[in-house]
Every structure is written in structure tokens, then in C-alpha cells.
Amino acid sequence: MGVTNGRLSSPPCSSYPLSLGQLGLRISKERINPPRVFLPLPFLKHVFPSDPFLFLPKSLEQNAVQMPTLAKKKEPDTTQLMSKMVRRTFLGGLTSAASLVTGSAYGKKSPNEVPNLAAVGVGGKGWVDSNGAAKHGNIVAFCDVEQAKGGKRGGFSAAASKWPQARRYTDWRVMLEKEKNLDGITVSTPDHMHAPITMTALQQGIGCYTQKPLTRTVYESRKVTAAAARAGVATQMGNQHHSGTSYRTLVNLVQKGMIGKIKCAHAWSNRPIWPQGIKRPGASAAAPNALQWDLWLGVAPERPFAPGVYHPFKWRGWYDFGTGALGDMGCHIIDPIYWALGLSAPETVLYEGPDPTKETFPKSERIHYEFPGTERTAGKTIKVTWHDGGNLPDPSECDLPAGTTLPANGSMFVGEQGVVVCPHGSGKLPSLYPEKKFKGIDFQVLPSADHYKQWVDAIRGEGKPSSSFDYAGPLCETVLLGCVASQVPGTKLEWNAKALRFNNSKEADNLLHQQYREGWEVAGI
Image (cartoon, rainbow, N blue to C red; front, side, top):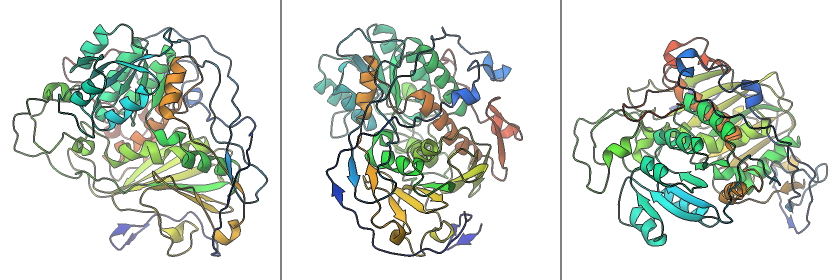
């Protein structure tokens, strides 16, 4: 491990000679009916062998809310998926990496033919989420702490104009108290408010579509995951690429063994594109009249408003409100690695980067995770490395040809028989290396699914969302462990998933959760 051109170089996975060639792709119109497909192993059976609260430390367990245990349901069958084929030849057709599940996977089914939905946060990503859900349900109420004018990015006025019949709120607590006929809510707020809103809704038997990361802290993730399992309602985390063609195709390639057993994996992002590694400003000002600043702060410690510092968008870099570049993008880009390999909780987490600041995440970082191996990994453990802030994997240390240009955001699997790289967010298909070796090889391109429709269909009792909280919660927990590690430099943290603590750092333990502001306590967290 070293420094090259001012950037940290990543450790090698292994090396072998590669040959270059032109990768030719031809799309055919063949239809494939794949057999029963792989579904990720439920993390809970590894971490919670009997009761989700069983291993919580007493200091955290005291606020646990006991909810009725759901009757165990028979696992539903999967549907046959229609897909396109990229023309190559490799062991015939490949099975899909994910499926749409038929039958009801939940204990609660909406009595409404068109489910009644509410939206918490209707500006920016909240506008995207509320509109995505509204295509399949009925928006009967919405809430936003800022009564801003409408525009392309939505907002309170835009929502009022689009859904004039919907009841309007600025305080989500009031909305959930008054609205007695909700089947589901979308939660699209700054990260620090995801868990409080989601937990409250779950306790009322309301299904949740919650933006990524599912929560801001590791402890919240554990609690929300357990609450969702007990509530038996439809849930989905907003990592929509999980349902997209690129990731589904990538996961399928890996699971079918196209590049052999996996030796290591990498995920990276060009974020942050907001301030990180900074100090709190000394100046403050009154919040705009349209913004309810106290409601925006919510469970976070009180602090004065500062123009252009936190709201909008820039809250992502602050410990109290966001989860940094890793938390913002990790639930997307680490997702196919976690999914394809069937990973559970990491054993160790190590931060590499600049010294942390008091209140914001670092400008750049590498997070080194080590997981227990699975049937798809080459060893008894597997290393997964996260890079951001301009850091990238070194192609020459990842069995890639020298000079290989990596996408700005992406995931990479280094296997015993080749390498696959998948750009994030571009819609492009994965690329296989060495190119000459894989030229003319067939692999299956899986169709995308509507992430919002999956959730609303599940509310109606039809199927199970692909990123429901039993999967998304443990994924988020893993990502957030890296956020903790970035605040404890120089220590290779040893994670004890069952006990919800680190074996070797009280300092890191103290970062697993933050006390909610007085008056904002939420039962169960």
C-alpha cells in the first residue's frame, strides 16, 4: 500500500498476464425462461438466530419495543423472467440474479385496491420518490418542512399543485397521528430523519419506502430491520439500481461463475460533490420563513441555521445529518458485491485517509472491509475495498491491463478466471477482462424492474420487493460500519455483529448511535 501521484494506492489482489482484444457484443431477440433463481441469504438468520433483540447490549436494549412475532410463512415461488441475451458462448444461458416473487410475502395486506400513500419530503429526491410511488398508488397526504415554491425539483407548492386533494403537513409526527388510513409512506429526508420516521410508521403498521441509506447509524439499522420483520409490512430501501439491468446482469455473471471464484472486490465513487473535511462556520442567520428549521433538525442536536451550509443538499457531509460519500453511495455501489457473494457482516473494518475533522466526514478515504468467505469466494475470507474522493483501485493491482480507464463510479470483482467491471448509474452493461478471452462469449442481460411498483405491489399482497429491509438493513449496517471506521483512524476495528459492538474499541462503540434530541425521542430506538 502506498501513494502514487498524490493518491493512495490499493493493495493488490493477485496478478496474472492479460491479453487485450476487441470486445464484440451482438444483441439477439432470443427469450430465456430461467429456472428458480438465487435469493440472498437472510442476514438475520446469521445475526439473530432467535430474537432480533437477543444480542443487544443492555444499555441499548432498554428501549426495545416488543412487537407480535409473525407466523412463519412458506417461501413463495419465483416467476419466470423474460430476458435479452448478449451474444456469446459460456455454459449456455445463465440464470437471473434476482426475481420478482409471486404471492404475498407479508402478514398485512392493504384492503384498498389502490393503496393510500403519504410522502415525507417532496423536494429533490423526495419529488422523484413521491412521483414514482404515485404511479401505482394514491397520494392522500404529504409532508415537507419547507413550504417552497414548486419547480423542476418539486417541493411543497409543486406537490400541492400535483395532488390538490392530498392533505398537507410540515410535521411528519402530526401527519402520522392524524392519517388513519395509510398503507405506505415514502421517506425522503436527510439521513438523520430516516430511522425516526420509518420506525414510527412501522409501529403503526404502515409500509415504508425509505431512501438510502436506510438509517444514519448502525444501531438504528439494526432496530429498524428488526421492527420491519415484526411488523410484517411491505418495505423497500431506495437503492433503485438494485432493480436495474446493469446490477442484475452483473450479479448473475458472478453467481454463474463466469470469472471463477472471487478473490477480492472494489467499489468506488467520485463523491463527495459537497463539502467534507470542514469545520462548523462561526456565522449564523435566521432561517428563511418558508423553512421550519427546528423540524428540519428533528432528532439532531440543536444548532443555528447557516445559509448555504446544511440545507439544501450539503447536509450529507456532516456527522449529525448525513453519512458522507460512503453512506450516500455505498448502498448503491457496494450492493452488487454484497448481493452477488451472499455476504454477511464484516469481521474487520479499517479506514485509510486523512485525519478526521470534528464534525464532517473526510474529503477522501479508503475503507477496507474483510468478510467471512462464502461459496463464491476464493478464500476463507474476502476483502472488499471502498474508495472515494478521487481515489480509485489501481488497475495493475487488480488483474486489469495497464492503462485501463475505470468509470467515475463503479464496482469490480476480481476472480480467479477474469475480472468484471460495472459502471454505476450509466445504464451500461458490465465489461469482462481480459477482453480477448471473453470475446464472443454469451451472457444473459436481465431486464430491469420498477423499484416503486415492487413496493406498492407488495402492499397489495403481491410479491416481495427486491431490497426489502431484511436485505437492505444488513447492507446498510455494513456500509455504516465504514462511516464509523473513518472517525477512528489507525485502528483495524473488529466487529462483533451478534453483540452489536466492536471487540477492540470503546471509541468506535460510542459512534454506533447518537442520543436523540430531547423532545424527539422515538419508541424503539
